[in-house]
Length: 95
Image (cartoon, rainbow, N blue to C red; front, side, top):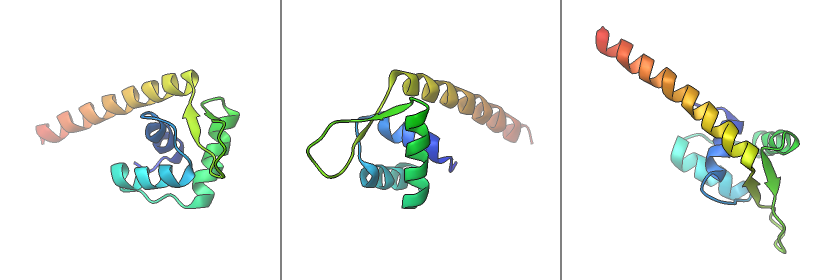
């Protein structure tokens, strides 16, 4: 799975993170390396859709937070993926 928006939302599900922290977290939990262009392009689109928002900070790094809409969207997407995984695994056991 290498869908940058979904990976970013999953990374933010356990708390606020800035871009580099998201890139590192995603590499660890998903084994996917997102380049800066891919990451920040997806962050911009997620912010425009109201799924994440920047958090005020005095640091030069900009952390982001999952919004309530972002949490609902992530839950729905993960439920859909879970259904696909269950069907795929069941079908594999039948062969």
